[in-house]
Amino acid sequence: MVHVFTRLIPLLLLLLLSQPAFAAQGLAIDPATCLGCHGDKISAEKMAVSVHGKNGCTSCHVEIVELAKHMKGEIKVGKVKCVRCHKKEAAEHALSVHAEKGVQCAGCHTDMHSHTSWNKDKRRVLAKCVQCHSDEKGFLTSVHGKGVIAGNQDSAACNDCHNLHEIKALGNPNSHTNREFHTKVCLRCHADAKLVERNHISEVAVKSYMESYHGKNYRLGYPEKVAGCADCHTAHGILPSKDPNSSVNPNNLVKTCSKCHDKAKTPFTKFYAHGEHNDREKYPILFYTFIAMTGLLVGTFAVFWVHTLLWMIRGFVENREKAAALEEGVILHHVPEGHKQYRRFKRVHVFMHLLVIISFLGLSLTGLPLKFSDQVWAKFLMDLYGGAPNAAAFHRVCAGITFVYFSMALAMSIHFLFIRKDIKGNPLQRLFGPDSLCPNLRDISDVVGMVRWFFFKGPKPAFERWTYWEKFDFIAVFWGMFAIGGSGLMLWFPEFFGMFLPGWAFNVATIIHSDEALLATGFIFSVHFFNTHGRPEKFPMDFVIFNGQMSKHEFVEERGDQWARYEKEGITEKFAAKKSSGIFYDFCLKAFGFTALFIGITLLMLMVYAFMHPHH
Image 1: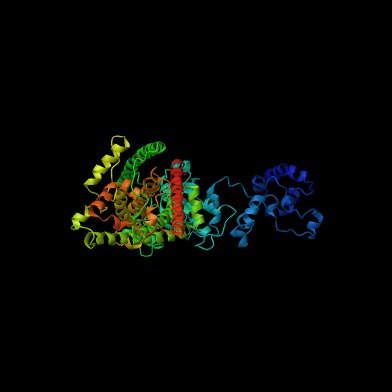
Image 2: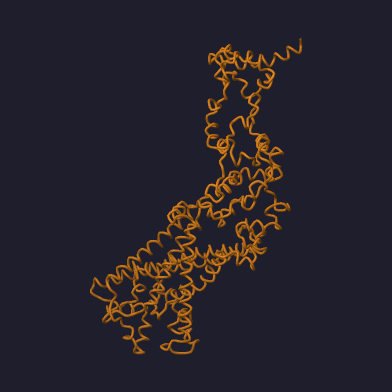
């Protein structure tokens, strides 16, 4: 009797729980009646405490509306349509690879009559998935798998990466979706600051990755050509680097890196995948490289921006003085035949400068979006180019142009020092002579004179053929080619340089290339643009570099000592222009020049905006 009573308790409980449901629906068949026949297969106790315990049987088996017909076999029980209650889950499942492969709800939820809530316990998810998916990739022994089994609900389980119901097929391994997946799912946890902190996970993993070439391309929306997290750490068998089976164990790095860099050797694997230039103890060489480059940046900009500001103020005052004098009918600097044109640059110089403009703007337009990959405008520019791979290809074409004009500059320098017949003196005298772009003692007096002029303490210096700021620009090309060009070649051909250079050299090259490029673009678009086009004497543009000509008035006023030397040597007319440049030529080159100027200033403004509004 006691045994019968204990059997009735869960049945009564089921009746009480389900009564409102089937009563509200006007159902005539109660669960107790159903269990009279199906009690041998369905446990009333388990059904009572399951998530479906409040439902009547006919809530799911809706075809059974008449018990008599059902018992006679006239009504066949069809497949339960879970979508009637679980619309969200069903919609997600319909788009999943499970639905595509014919795996329906009951394929995973085999315990429909005793199913209890998982209560966010990832162990239940893992136990369910491994019933079909064998652990051949080593997830159960990975750091994630061990964490889940140990009950750490922060540890990644199958559903954290693949979702519970909307499980997408990865498809083509080279597709955008697949490549993005390699990193996107990892960021769900590793970019969660609170989760990272409470689990004592390295917080630099995501930050350092996003600052790398790989991460920047991912952030810009083009993960197809770069490595994602799973490419190095694998998707399932993730182990600490100390574990001999880990893909990032030092002994396994050649194999891991070779998946993308097929010629990678042991030196190549010394690359700091998550190197932080702020960590002096762990990465001292990166730290001091960054400090040196930052010092160069700050020092250069501090000196030349102050120089530019002082010149701007003093030039404005001088222009006002000239205007006031003209109002009184006085010409402060009268030059006879002042409008006569003289040749300052040859065609080869104009051609070289056009190469410089094209290559520099091309490098800036394609490089700065990578430098500031966290900016909306960077993503816009990359999309405009048709993607990061296109931008990279164009960047390298422009780099090739840079090597061309640099080679021309070297050839012309050798010709100037050793071959030219119209320059007096031996190579050493030529190197430090007035026609040379090499700095000399005269430049010191010119700098002092210019500073005195800034503060109204003396006249503006009467410069020779080259001013000290023009010489700085020229010398900067040589330094820039060593810094930007050298580091750029290393990053362009990492497998070749990785044969004999340690991998951390690429970390150093990245810092140098990035910061030197920032220095070059910032300097050209602010200081150089002002010195040549923006200063009050020349605004809005000095056209001499495009047609190679300048008036005698400009010549005498800006380079008085050069003109005086030419007069003394009796060679002034040797440089007289035979004819002025044509209208069509001037129009095209001025349009090109103003376009370049506009692009440069726009990029400068975007750079300033990026520093003022960093996104993380």
